Length: 178
Image (cartoon, rainbow, N blue to C red; front, side, top):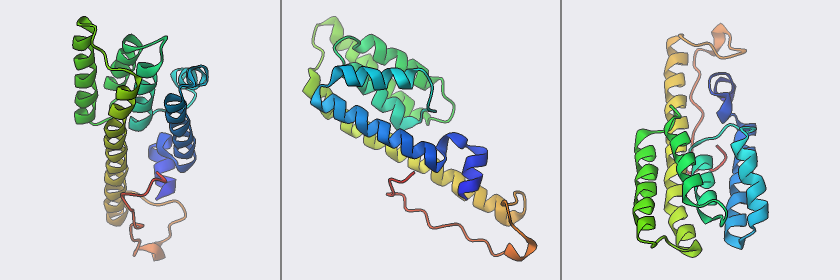
């Protein structure tokens, strides 16, 4: 099944997911420790599109710009717009994030934006939801491809006629390896 993921959605292959997860953790560490120069380097590497972005990475990037003293709300808003233009991200997540940005823009009019600590606390549920949405997207792909393999519509690489009893590998929705 990993071969099919590599073939149909290469941005979600195991190797790329590992790189993205490492980068997301680094961004969160930089945010928590207020290492803004290091955070800037990682945010720019994401912006340059060297690594395909997913739901969690867009969310990390958005909050990274929110806490960065040189960027703030305008940069986070551009990330939100970019995220909205991506087809594979679930519309509910897009609405959730854009609603948060609209709320912050309203608070900005009254000079009532939350401080660094409050933004960090707010990032936790957003990142958890983005992670769940990503896992469900991959699970839906796996189930769809399993049905297509069983119906003969898709042939797995190295599959022979003797492999008709192919079973979907067990997928733990709480597994962080995706």
